[in-house]
Image (spheres, rainbow, N blue to C red):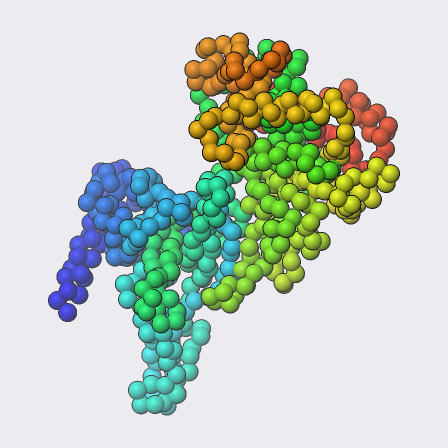
Length: 609
């Protein structure tokens, strides 16, 4: 009893300090204005910057970060007192008011992978991508019961481990009073709150190679529900808590962890590299001095460890840049994403090209035809093992929104997984605005030149029409060509770093990519900050006379991001040329839009509109 009294006294003291922080004239009444805005907008959540609290009361801010449950409860009570002093009628209309936090969290700004036991009970800021989303359901907060025999009314409040209270209430729903008289529930007078569970997974591009991405279940209540959907990248701020397991609970000693959110914020869809003023100057100078052969030079620098395939590399460069997306007045959208399909014999570097794109594109998701079953490419409705309720789970194309999806063994994918969404009575609209780079093998194992391309590919025409560019890669037996390939491959292995373990994979993004094709005349100034060209290594050229300039991967990434900011417009001569080419090809109606997309991407390469 004494401990409870001390706790209550501490909470009252905390409540008083939080009220002083909110009702403060020294800060020009910033939060007084915010509270009035909250009331005028008919909201019940106030957004507080943790940096403001640190500046005013550092001790209280530190306690809020470490002992989040009691402190947040005191903060919310202080907010209710503040609202009551401003507008007593509005305070009575809402049972509870909530605090949302923003600002800098330092060491507590983490990913689902770095959440550990030392963070339990504290405030954390987690960034990730939403992969699963449950349905929004009402959760009872207070039930009102009427007894016809005694004409009395009683009420009961409910709290569980997902609320801020330290101890959960009894979960037994009353059906009889103390004298065994039956009770009737007054559903209209009972209070409920919206409740939803989402799963946040660490960003696919930030997960360590060879390890599965980690995820975390997040509880969203009241006004936070439906704040984000699968595939969206979010920053969630809330309290980190552990829950006992359902069966037995305390026997194994291991607990399930969840996060109770107090603020959900969407982070930018675009993964933008850090640009400095010299970087922008170098990009502009590069685009002006190399305007004639820029397309060839950039495409040649894509996957330089792969010999040949010049046209395919040009197509992949156009795909990375993309066309211009158009939104029509009637609300429909003409995609700017370019889709590429590579189909051909085994061992012609299809998968290696896909792996290079994974390392170059700012946002790229890899999947295979065999491995994407279950969720499919877009989304599927799955059943939660613990609650048994249906959840919407995002697939590869939704996770790669505004990026690139690389699908290997596209021909092995079942028809059901290629289709949009599995039937389960849930209708949802998810964003899957991404380019697709797919690799597939022919129906007969090797490409049969005596059959038509459609017979070799074995995919439906409706699916093939979605690919803007389709390349057939043949393993032609030509002695001269084979000699060039073997010379290229042997030179890469011959000068391999002796410290590397035998049998380990060549790093596609590392210097090994460009061993044979580096620039000896690179300007020293360009190598200080952002290297435009890879450095030359005398040993690795061997007897090779020609030394191609190869653009560094870091410069390539920044150049692509910079070029995508340009919005090219088709001129009349260019439009006439496309019309002539289309009438010459006359393959399908889709072809004109495909040519326009590739033309836009080509204009982006030269950073001109």
